[in-house]
Structure formats: C-alpha cells, structure tokens
Image (tube, rainbow, N blue to C red; front, side):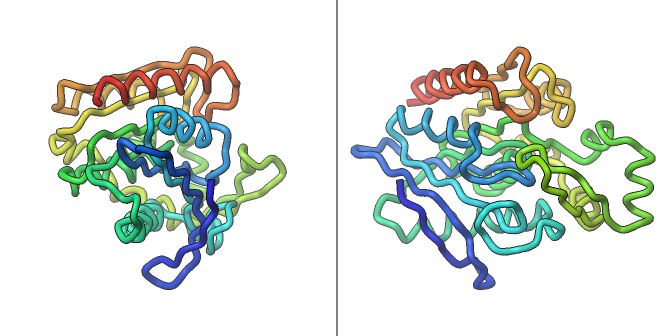
Length: 257
C-alpha cells in the first residue's frame, strides 16, 4: 500500500492510496461517498475484494470532504467529485501499472460519478460497480424532508452531523443541491454496455432498493446483477455485511474474467 499526493487540474492536492498487485489482471478506481474518506471500512472492503481477484486499486479522498485532500466540506458537489475522478484517472494514465479497460467502483455519490464516467467513456470501462448509488435528483428528492429542503434553500446552508465521523458538523451549502439537480444517470443508461454490479442495503433510506431497481431495468447489458444486503443501511459497517459484499464482488469479477 502506498499513500500519494497528486495535483488536480487546478493545482489542488488530492490524497490517494495505491495498492498494486503482482501479475495484475486490471485496475480498479474506487470512489467514496459524500463526507466519506478513502480508509472507510466499506471502501477498504471493496479494495480488498478486487485485490484478491488480482486487480490493483486506487482510492482517493475527494476534495471538500473529511479526508486529506484540499477543500472545504461546504463546497462539495457532484461536479467536484466527478472532476476528481477524471483527474485521478488522468494521473494514472502516466503510471506504469495503468491498464485499460479498467473497472469503476463507487459508493453513493462515488457511485453516480462512476456511472457518469462510464456513460461518457464506455470504451474505457471493463465493468461498473456502483454501490448504494445515487441515481437522479428526481428520485433522491423523495428521500428528503420537504420542509428541510425549503429551509435549506431559504437559509442557503444546512448543518448536518457526520455519520462516518461522529461529532463532526458539516455545513452544506444549497449549491450542493442546486448542482445535484442537474444529474440523472437514467438519461444515458443505454450507454452502459459493460457488465454492471449493483449492491444496496435492505434498510437504505438514502438510495433505496426501489431506486436501484429502476436503474437496473434501464441498463441494457445482459450481464447485470442487483444484490440486497439484508439488515444493512446506506453505509456498510457490520463485519458480516462487509464480508458478504467482498464475496459478491469476488464472484462478479471472476464471472467477467
């Protein structure tokens, strides 16, 4: 495992962890969710599963999160998340271990940016694994309290306690929601011609099973899977859930290899 700091398109610092394996079969880029970080247990689990399948992995702290990359949490957007993914891939292209086509994996907000990239650059993506992924604002809006959204827009920001870092209060600008309304992966889902693995927790209220089913039906590729982790919420923390996910990922990768 190697921790590195690279610069993005604007000269801002992005922290990443590179795990290379001998005789690699490919490369996987793994993106965490909003307010998350590269060392979270479920992000580690994703990485471990792919490494066991002989894939080198790259996971990074998105800017404007609680990790080691630059930026303020209040400035996070899907746009900034997507830019970081593109910049990490651009950096990787210059490395000796880089390989195309590669696999994209992401949790929640990391899931939607992985899908967005795959829709735009499908020839570069061998397979896609969006976990508990955001699908569209029209669907996500159903999971928000309408009064909270109204107050958020009027005040201009919303203070939210982090679940991944208890005690940490995140100030979220309304600009985050305004930016999020512009993204809907269902519009270009016909471009997802690669194998796709979807996983969601049974008790996920942020990106529930219903949303994943809608995305699943929109994906044209016949090699697509949707797995439900019983008893799990949006973020996977229990050891049994993490082990189940690792097993699912391993089987999926073996099936596409």
